[in-house]
Length: 327
Image (tube, rainbow, N blue to C red; front, side, top):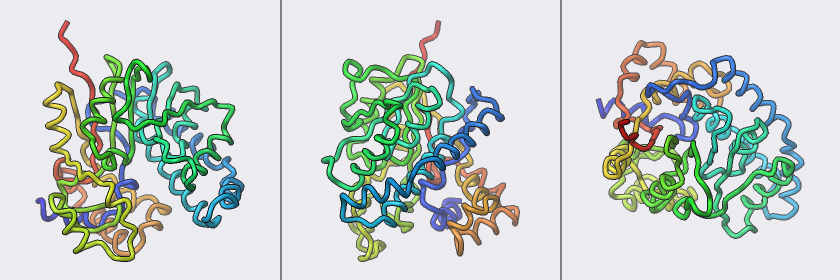
């Protein structure tokens, strides 16, 4: 089964494009199906209304990057915000204090703030002069009226006295880039309200596949893996930031600290199904990947894929909460 799962995962799209349709862990949806659909439509309208071309031109004038490169980054983060909203839409309800960890260009947080949710974005400052920082500041400036609060410290430095507490903490493809992810989890738990929960999506490196680059990886031998599989033409910055976290790592951490956890099932199935069902998504992954998705979904193998346990699939989505004392 592991070999079969590995073969399919190895040709799947990057993890940041896989997380979708949360959650199968006996969570009762706060928003109805109709409300969730309407929320998604409003997110599309919110993103479509952003003056991407104007922002790209503005940032290009003060950086060494061209408009096309900047516009492509804006499109990538816009798509990410769709995934992030999909990650938590089953948990949204008025009155919750939300924290987005690794907010990127803050599209998700800005949209949720515009919807009336009480949300704070965490995106560590990295000097203030790079293209990313300029782009983030330009996006925030465009929505200055929303007065989104942005915390600029690493997740490991969160503390309740300075930053308050939150009912829902979430991240999308961020945890795998935090060197000391255990310290980050401890800090996030320290600002989590008693009844609150965390939802995190990231790759599961128990599966020997690196989704950012689409190459195999031996997580205990990252240097050798880089030498063997990473093209010399690739920018290794992302690779060097990876901590190669696994499902087992998170499970052991939660058990050690008395936290309740639940991993979503059927993520790989949902990813392949989306490629097969969604023409735009399929176009982005045309070729061998799209062919595999079509074959799997139309050959009857999809039902087998559905049964792959989270520990043997990538990416992973985990919901974490405090264990509640018995009354």
